[in-house]
Image (cartoon, rainbow, N blue to C red):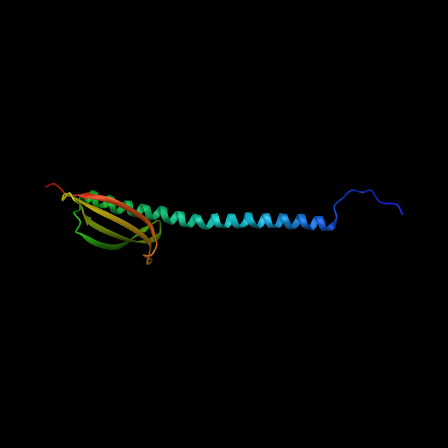
Length: 125
């Protein structure tokens, strides 16, 4: 019997190569899906940061002298509703008050999307 000298891949080698390619493609697909999920979280955090900055800017523009304690409310940003909580704390200097603004996805105060600290000044009359 004469042996054939044709060089080529066997069926087993082709199947192993296809399995390796399939695993690699599944890992790439999973990574892309994770990136897509992170985009929604990043967008929400960006908008929540704007809500916090807007709260502090509004107090400064109005020259509000905020009472000590906690205030809650909600604000709409880019069509999305956010809940916020402001904690007004006394400082060693009686002319300043510290304001901690925490912003949450509406109705869920367990996970803050943004936290901003600022100060308001006693208005001069």
